[in-house]
Image 1: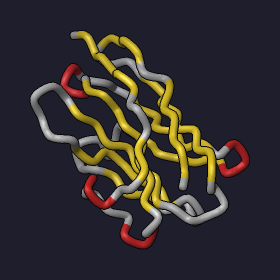
Image 2 (image 1 turned 45 degrees about the horizontal axis):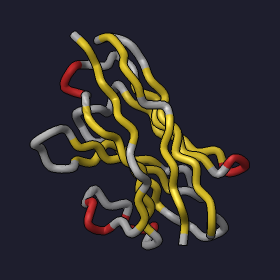
Image 3 (image 1 turned 90 degrees about the vertical axis):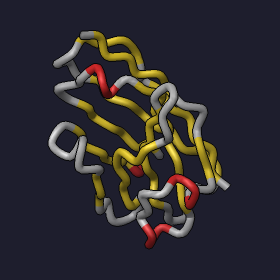
Length: 125
């Protein structure tokens, strides 16, 4: 098992930047896909980006592809999501998730077994 804790959310003005962190603990020697999802009020949880823990291969949702960068630091057991040029529609709770079936690199939240508690990102206009 792996435990995930997100941090770095907050209030930012439109056009600003935020860097979210997802600290992993537990069985971090295994290979996972680690992804960021987000959920806005009244909306379904949606995929943002994912990274293969071992190879660092990445995948992005089209809506954030040019504005976000996902990365991982194996030494710190942490995955980061750098978000730039933020828009009010980026306002959501951002969740970190891990999938032990790392080869899937899925965009589907139901395929992720491990979840953090989420961190709120609010973008003001």
